[in-house]
Amino acid sequence: MIDLIKDLFGKIGSPVNLMEVCGTHTTAIFKHGIKALLPEGLKLLSGPGCPVCVTPIKDIDKVIAISMRNDVILATFGDMIRVPGGEKSLSKAKAEGADIRIIYSPLDCLDIGKENKDKKVVFFSAGFETTAPSVAATIFEADRLGVDNFYVYSAHKLVPPALEALLQSGNAMIDGFMLPGHVCTIIGNRPYEFIPAKYSKPCVITGFGAEDILAGIAMLLKQAIDGRAAVEIQYRSVVRVDGNQRAKDFINEYFGVCSSYWRGIGLIDNSGLRLSEKRRHRDAERVFDIDVIDYPEPSGCQCGLVLQGIKIPPECPLFGKSCTPERPVGACMVSSEGSCAAYYKYRQ
Amino acid sequence: MCFAVPARVVKINNLIATIDAHGARKDISLLLLSEEVKMGDYVLVHAGFAIQKVDEDAAKDALNLLREIAEAIE
Image (cartoon, rainbow over all chains, first blue to last red; front, side, top):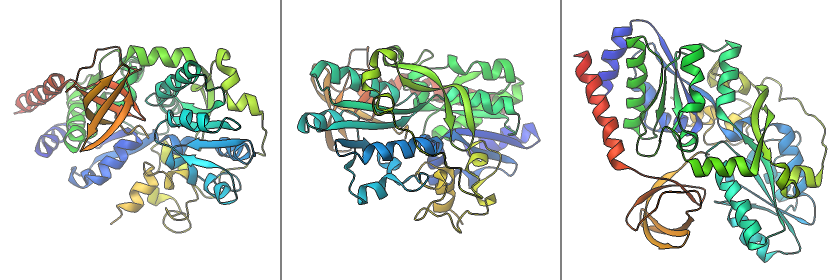
């Protein structure tokens, strides 16, 4: 496969920058040592597809404030608890006495809710289209089972609007996109069709094995050689053109689209999900109505530029010095899927 | 965070399936699937839910496509 990539790249004859949008791809690319196999001039840039990395400081701080209430049990996925907020992280709040649980599935919250009827169980939910249907289905189950003390704090984000913002800004030099296989399992091809249509950039929805990633790169190069741009599917075992209709219906029923702030990048129109009006009684942000101080991004932190493929992590002055996985300053160093954490772990 | 793994369905009880992933058994929800799932099928699992049925034949199409690309540039 690598010979095929070298042959294809040789036919193009000029540098090519491809963006892997998804943090799970970033991790896999480093784990399999793929960058070292590629010919010089063929570059992979990490994109904004790490939910932990793009969750704003303000959301972290609001959730910490909610978690400090005596009547709350806060549940979240493991990666979220070490993300630095304005003053502290959820893990620090936990050490100070907040009841914070790390869960594997949002459904786990319903068991916690049934066992703790005198408490409010708040799920701090970050993630893209892959995760939103699971959260929606958990609300459906909470309604069905009568778990009335279950709430969701939604920091959910949508991938296509972020790519549109990236392309509109024109700051990143990207020749093609390796699209996130599991987000596309839910939403399919169509939400990305603006990329080839408006920006003439090839796109390939790619799986997560080493062979999948190399195949995705080969398919992107082939489009470039043929002078065409389309959304193609490499990850055919699970990605259908229309995605998973039932999962999309769950998102549409339980969430509404809103503008959303991406940490390090800024406000992007129609790029977030909040609970729909009909479910507002389960929306922790509205129920608890907490306001917190605005904190700026940490001084010197380049996460925003890294998330847009404009800089690579070693170009940040804090990288490996004041910012390490043990003592992260920026969110890209916290998440195992963050570009900075991957560069640090696999640095030469 | 969009991590998901394929796993084999070994038991089905209404909308709950028991899966076997590398020897570990776990119950997951089938609420997000409209396609019928049978014992022995593989499903893609994310955060306690099956989010798609795995279609191995379709995966072979992708390999054929790659073969065509390789032949075309020779």
